[in-house]
Image (tube, rainbow, N blue to C red; front, side, top):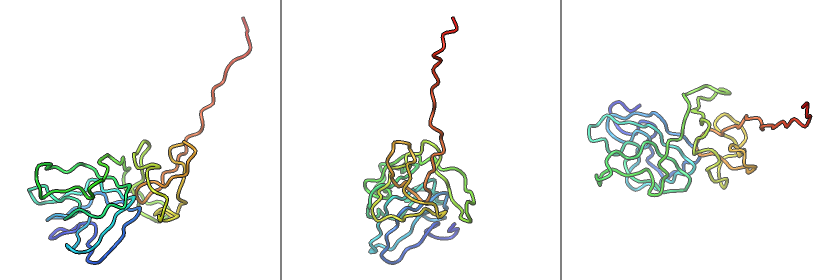
Length: 178
């Protein structure tokens, strides 16, 4: 948390590409609770979640970033910007999907602190497999079939959802006991 400044999650002052990351529950006293950047750096985000990042300044603008970043595709933001008529506020990227990613509470799994995706998250199997990491933050394989449709698609964010649901079995009684 940036109690007296900007960039509660991350401050970037050079060119960067952020892939399969989760910025959640960060706080900044000023603005840019997730990412603060200079004005000239080329910052691209892809397959990344921005969720519940908050600021202390009273205008409730620029909660996630201080400017729009380059859209590498397949990003989620929640909640939506608070001031839709305020030209000083902006989505993280121009084409970001605004939806609740259904993150579970912070947990330590395999030595890594993660915010797992909950069942039914719009981030499950919604990423792009190209140029992404082959493992998630825990070191688990990417991509998996998180939604059970038979396709291996990476999830958005730092965590790859594991679908542990057992296939349902329908039993039909063929004995007619009268």
